[in-house]
Image (cartoon, rainbow, N blue to C red):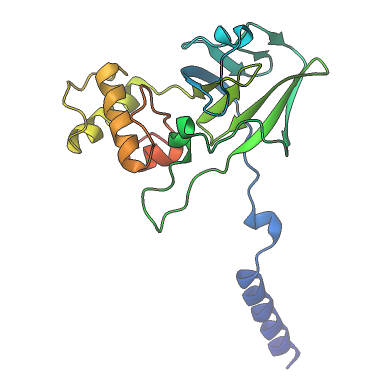
Length: 223
C-alpha cells in the first residue's frame, strides 16, 4: 500500500511539473552581441530636422565592430576593459519609417517572431562609450552623436549563405542574376524588394537582414 501511494505521488508531481515548468527552464537568457559586425547602411533619422557637422562623418559603410575579449569600435576605439548591460532607455526611435524594415515580423502568422529590440549600454574603461539597440542576434543599430543618423550593423554572411539567398530570391522571381555568392547590387535590390513585400515602408538601398526577414526565405545555414 505504501509503495502504491508513493507511485501515485510521483506521477502527480510529474504531471504538475509538466504543466508548470519552472521559470528557469521556461526562459532562456538572450545572448549579448559577440563577434564581428559590419556597418551596412546609414539612414537619416526622420524626426531630426538637420544633420549637424558632428554627425556628417560619424559613420562609414564597411567599417566593423568586434565584440571579443577586446572591443574594437567603429571610430577606432579599442577597449581592453569593457562590458555591456541592458538599460531601459530608448536609444533610438524604432517607429521611424526609415527603420521600418527592422520591424518586419514573422513570415508565418503561427510562427514565433524572433527577437525583441532592447537597448544595450557599452562601457569602456569605466566610462560610457555608446548605447546600441539590439534588434536580434544578427542586427544592431547605433545612433550618431546628435541623433541625426542611424547606422545598421549586421553579422556578415558567408559565401554559401549568400548563394542560398540568391537561389531563394530567384525562385521567388525577385532576383534574376547569376548565383555567385556575392552580395552585389542586384542581390541587394532583390532583398530590398522582398523586404518591402514583407512590410518595409520603402525599397531601401540596403535592407536590414534581420532574423525575421531571413526566416521567411528558409535558407539552410542562415539563422
